[in-house]
Amino acid sequence: MKDQALIFVTNDDGIHAPGLRALIGLAREMGEVVVVAPDKPQSGMGHAVTTSSPLRIKKIHTEDAYQEYSCNGTPADAVKVGEKVVLKRKPDLILSGINHGSNAGINLFYSGTMAAAMEGAMSGIPSAGFSLLDYAYTADFGPALPYLRKIIRGMLEGRLTPHTCLNVNIPAVPSEQLQGIRVCRMGKGYWEEELEERTDPHEKPYYWLAGRFVSLDPHNDTDEWALKNNYISVVPLHLDLTEYKLLESLKIFENHDPHHT
Amino acid sequence: MKDQALIFVTNDDGIHAPGLRALIGLAREMGEVVVVAPDKPQSGMGHAVTTSSPLRIKKIHTEDAYQEYSCNGTPADAVKVGEKVVLKRKPDLILSGINHGSNAGINLFYSGTMAAAMEGAMSGIPSAGFSLLDYAYTADFGPALPYLRKIIRGMLEGRLTPHTCLNVNIPAVPSEQLQGIRVCRMGKGYWEEELEERTDPHEKPYYWLAGRFVSLDPHNDTDEWALKNNYISVVPLHLDLTEYKLLESLKIFENHDPHHT
Image 1 (tube, rainbow over the protein chains, first blue to last red):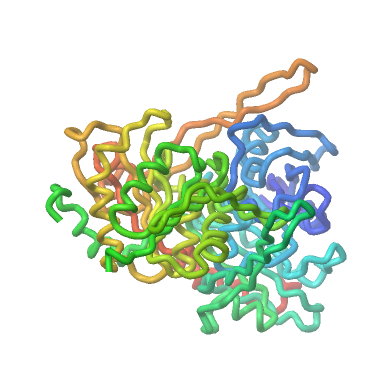
Image 2 (cartoon, each protein chain N blue to C red; image 1 turned 180 degrees about the horizontal axis):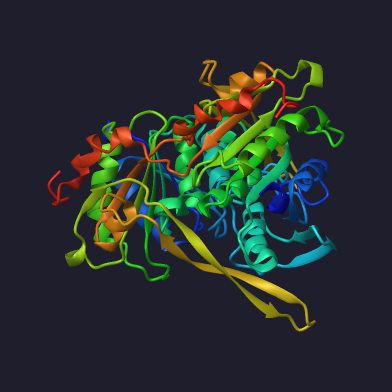
């Protein structure tokens, strides 16, 4: 199966990002590769989709087992366009990244990288998003590659269940410090925002959104813990956010006469 | 508690949307209300946040127990700006909507309305997103209001657990057909995309993203079922997407020597 696998690759840092090149390199070892990536950076776009303006795609490179296109939309758009316009069939895998910056824990909700992987999961295609905790253009993806190769091979061998995907985050450490892979759960945490106020030349205020991530989850089975301890974190995700524990107690809302409360 | 409650209201259809007005009206019955809503429609923005351009806010209306601002960002931005710049403290509730169009099932991932509610859940504030299955500007929010009032009161009474929120969807039917509230789980489904190809005056192709939602989940305990049967669906959500069932089988990735596969 590996030889004929059709692997779709995208990202959210855009078609020129070094992390995308690293992932394409890995994918090309394992099958036919089609890339559709945003034509400009789309970090922090979350699961945005483009329905009020038209999408366009641009052919960048085509040879037998390797095609590359850019798209003017978001990462989620790129997956949809890739499947319906470029491939016209379902790929065997969707790989997204390698993102510059962490998508661990709840960061996945803001992440275009992870939105692309979750699009794949929605369509029933084994998918993964990869992120390196290094924003530098010169970030070194090398130390992680043997581990990512193993993960991608596992995906091709059918290790994921239908409608699931992986959130893979990589600590920014040299090979000799990398401790291996930890399969873990999403750590709990939140962003403590700091909106920095500045004044423009017209004396009007504006704000920069910044902040720091606060972990609420000190346990050693989370992605945050794994990354802090120099492990590559692998979190399997599904798409069901239902808080089942609340279903019973909220039945009080089902009283049919809302005028009597 | 109700009298002094501080209620933050936002949406994704923008400050001028009729659905926002309906929700503001409800909120003002129950406490002090502060609105920060996007200055233009932000449908389909998912959980996007704005970090590469500055945010601005504009005061629209202020009186003692009611303040209204617009913001040039996304719904998630509006919550962050609202909390840190306008309120400077945590509100008791975050209400988002009433959205024009369904956010049931996996649609919540694309939804700015639900991103705002999930932002609230991240911050530990009881939050809810409300959506009416009617895109018309003249959509009638009236039939749902008594039910939403009941839900919001329940939230103020502490019915949610920390870091959870509600996804509330309303069928577009007149009062006499509305069957009440169903507390349910997220239905499984996906979008079957149809990317319509057109040709511009310069003979270049472009694509419109459209499609239809396909339910994979015929059971009567889902939001899709509730809405089809004229119930208001209430789905409690948490923020943990971990697929716990896969944690054990994926441990095979933890082999420390990735070169031996």
